Picture (spheres, rainbow, N blue to C red):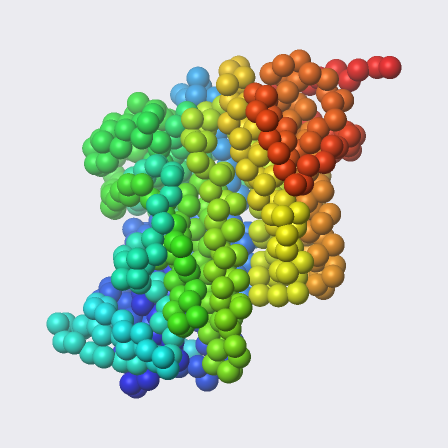
Length: 564
């Protein structure tokens, strides 16, 4: 319960974003006075609380290293063995014949499958132990902003209460209290819907086939610990293991291909799964188990025109922006938003002028979000195309490790010297990355029209490609000073440019029969002859080493190199 009338920070919402931010603030400054107002008046349900159960490298670093939760996660949550994808929709009754993409051995960089109910209950106790005040059953009614402090009005059991705070942070999730009050919501042109439920039994896809060769691809037990994606045109289905032998199952689909009304009720979703993923359907029809919940979310993507204000308020988590659950980026955006928010609060409390940082962080958050959204927009029709999606996933992971995750794990998000270097001008590293990423997503979209062959029984491990392995290892295995980190970003963007150019050569050869030796400008390349201009325009000759490594992602017959 609240213990005083004035706080340094009041956080609206005691979910993952709000509770981790409170911990971060208190760990950085034990003297800071923080209050969390949480609408829920009791413990969260274990096994059936919220989605966002799968973490990837950036968020995992935040939880394990920044917040110091490594030992807790190792003891009380499941380890995660990467993301795993199954294509080949012609083999939906025989999983061993589907093209499979995923790691086959234990990964060097950890991640987790998190039961959000257990985790958020435990986070409340951790917050209380740190001396953070938490009021449960608190319904926020209003925030009045002042020049020196803000006034927060809320109710508990119908009784109004008022408190003052220098900072207010909105972590109310999709309730988006401040976004609604101040009107800074942005519509995102990504119309995709989701439905999900949890079951109280273990779903292990290793049980779906007796094929010995298929089982030999992956170390025993590791498929079960992966976030499984069953893929076809316009949709993907997730299977996520949780502690206590529970399982999360979700459908995410483009309504232009799979109308929401076909799976927006539990019975409809089970019928939809029976039609589209029959092996999973058989698993769900087993007797003796219970379906724990059923929830839906329509048009889940949303943006924000402002995220941090010089008037000393901020938004984090889903109160700010949300992209898409594919690749599990939700907790990543929490980690980044909390890092920027905590930095602003701590500097302000020390008397520092935060005007520049506030505007810069808000714009930087928007840049990261806007660079991420092309991974999804108009991409769902490609989800069942094995070759297109293999190239896309390899690229998306390489860019994610080499740019987003690298800057976070090396404390770059609040390093102004580094940020100025990588963001200044149209030819800066971050702008080149954004432009290159958009180009690649258009390339995948265009190539889909030429990728019509059916493939089967192939196994692809991204970590068989050395450049991808190196990009992931750099996340944690090396420490970089500012100059070294800037140099590493320059090296990585050049690597990504060659990665893009080689991917284009392979796709152009398949689509149009062009020479595999063609020089390529990764910023203006186009399979459909679209004229593109770019300040970053540069023509690249073929890099034989990168070409040899990326050969491992190509399912079509590999082009024969021309001889002089």
